[in-house]
Image (cartoon, rainbow, N blue to C red):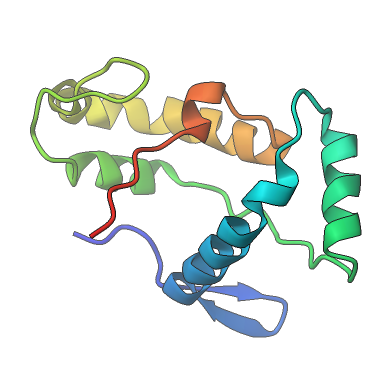
Length: 129
């Protein structure tokens, strides 16, 4: 079951999400060494990025996450006892999914709008294929 759109629109340009993901991945993999800065505030980080990437950034619209997208994503999780950084198992999420859609949509949209994320959401386990 696929819950996410495969294309989004930025001004008059249709952007295919898999291509955008690959472009972001390549860009950030190549810049990670030059961005190793500890304990900087957001304005220092933005000015550092602007110096390394001098032409204008295109502002991206925040596309709100809907309750139905959350519920669809939760229902597509494997029914296992494994958990993420919050310690809640997939099995428990699936059982409570209908009730979590609205509060999680609120939290995720708030995080996206403010641009501040909990540290545990900044890490992932990447397994090369």
